[in-house]
Amino acid sequence: MEIKSTMKLSLGSVLYYWPRQKLLDFYAQAADWPVDIVYLGEVVCSRRHEFRLDDWLQTAEMLAASGKEVVLATQALIESESDLKTLRRIASHDYFRIEANDIAAVRLAQGKPFVAGTHINVYNPQTLEWLAEAGAFRWVMPVEMSRTLLHELLAQNARKLETEIFAYGRLPLAFSARCFTARRYNLPKDSCNFHCLEAPYGMTLNTREGQPFLAINGTQTQSASVYTLMEELEELADCADVLRISPQPEHTGEIVALFRSAIDGITTATQAAHALASFLPAEPCNGYWHGRAGIDHSSHPTQGMHT
Image 1 (cartoon, one colour):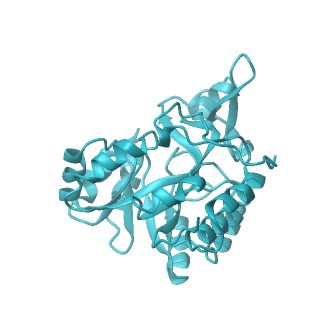
Image 2 (tube, one colour):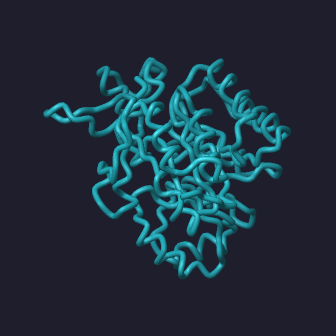
């Protein structure tokens, strides 16, 4: 079945630690991709300095000039006065809107239009209403929320905030004050030797039985499987204003193009899902969307996974 919708596509913040030149090349390419919104900024760890705030702002200006809506993302776990200083600087920016990934960011952004990020836990209409009163014009659904709970919440979304849904990528599950990557190398967090640069898609953690279970990404825990809602595009058209694609080191442009072609009805969602399989760096999952264990997947197109 063809999907015809006014849904927008967004490119989430890069959640990994990539070298400066890789970031420059990535966003130069993204300027020509069929995404409507680009989120920029360091969400995971303040020690990642290949790009500093001025670099993000220069990239934001370049992408805005190419016609993209640019949103500056804030760090999800604020741990120091220097983190707060950066957060205050982002929140005070008048030209670009921000994505608040921490309640401190919500407080600083209050009175200005902002996006309530996926790390702001929204599970009831009262929280959504409070965020709208604070200035939120869009919210990102928590990744573990099911379609049933989403529809129940949206039925009570009196202010009709835009709804953005994480539709592709390793799921951002949790944060810790400890750095899992540094621990992997028996190093203290503040002397980590920036080993995250060696893991551009995180480090997969297996169970004792050898099953990929989680991915560690500095202070962030992710799913080992790749969450994809490509096959659910028809029902997403009824509840999502924006679909988010989380960047991966390779083939992000091709993934964006597949989502765009399916949304525009150029291909079917089933055809796009089969084509998408060749770009997956790990097994797919979509269990949370269906109210099941997150690692589950409702169907498996023929796998030709890229490694």
